[in-house]
Amino acid sequence: MRLLVTFCMLLFISVIPAKTQIIDDFFDLVPGRGSQKLAESGVSGFIDYQYSGKISKARGEANHFSAVFIDSIGRIVKTVEFNRFNQPENYSCYTFDDPGNLVQRAHYDSGGKLLWHEGFFYDVSGKLIERVEYAEDGSVDGKTLYFFNAEGHLYKTRQLNYAGELSFWQIIHYSATNLPGRISLKQAQGFTMSNTHIHYNDHSLPVERIVSAGAKGPVTREKFLYDDDALLTEQRTFNEGDLKSILVRNYCRGNFPRMLMENKLYTDDVKCTEKAFGSLISGFTSRASFPGGIEGLNAYLTSVVQMPDSATQQGVVMVVFEVKSNGKIRKVKVQKALSPLLDEMAVDIVMDMPPWIPAQSPDGKPEKSKVYLPVVFLK
Image (tube, rainbow, N blue to C red; front, side, top):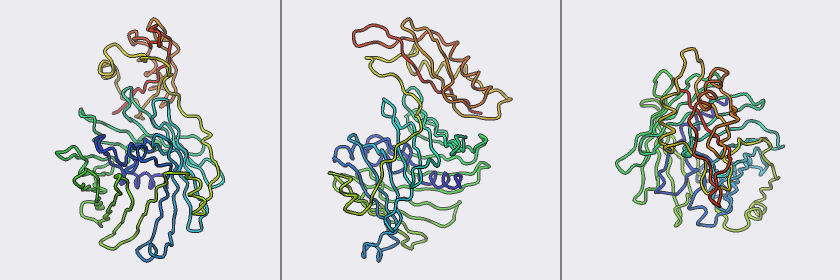
């Protein structure tokens, strides 16, 4: 079932470049990343009303509701889904690190029981490199690996199953204006599962998305409408030309809990009980860095990280270590394991690194600090 959910999410993934700054969460690349437009518009939350067609919309008879809570800087912090009887069905809670990256999204049932959760991991430059799905018991249920080109655009993802084997992969093709125009989703053996084409208006807002199953299979067409703040207000979905559903988004720029009560959508406070992976310690004018900066670090890792032939898994080992005030590396530990072999290799790679440039305190003195470094192993 989770594999099917992941496949559906892959159909929905895309990337909007920074210059559009509109609906970053809409295509679900990095959920909860936030939208500058939401923050500028003072949105405290919104409700999605899902209708089965024009008649149900005219009657105001939504068959599904989603309440989305927004913080003061435009990030999604919690979502609650309701059935047609206004009863909550499930929750999702979001956790962020100090730099503002989403590091965890936990999913609960209506009673607050954790069902499954996702961890998000980034490289030292802040780019997303891996999303890991965890089952209720904490075991790995699947992974998505992200690859960026020299221009900083996501151009490829790999979807791995619980055993670390490739299940799906996708290639993102960009237009001359650096907007994602076509996305090809393929099965591990190379069979085309879907092709997605995205069309934009003069303001670089996506106004239509066309998804075809296989090479020439059934076509799903989605059309998007926006308000004067470039925020999504309506999404219409067509299947083989027939209107199948209408999503209407209603934003709140005031007291969002009051808006929910007026809609008779009652929510309980559900907290994320899972601990997120630690972030870099704040309070420094500059953080600890590798000699030569990010480019030097990437070049070093590229030269020393080698995937052994005996390894059966691929992915990311998250390593945490301490950079002392003299730049020496100490207390190297694995924060997120992958396999005993690769975990040990990652620790050895970090321990063999040259001294780092230590973090600097506000008064200009070198300070001891922690660093969280992802070591990527790919075949």
